[in-house]
Amino acid sequence: MGKKPFPKTKTELARFLGISMSTLKRWLKKKELTVPRGLIPPIKVKEILKKLGYEEEP
Image (tube, rainbow, N blue to C red):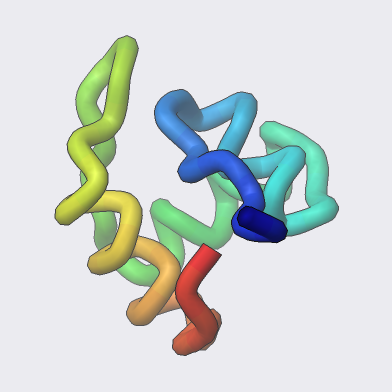
């Protein structure tokens, strides 16, 4: 019931992490992660969060 909504786009993901879009893009590039345009599948979001060091489930 107190769960946060799962981020679905890059903008929502950046907002969830508390960073700007440009910072998210830099982090993704640094970790060599490619993210498709539009909606991001939940499995890909989990992979991104794990590689960025966020082990906690959203």
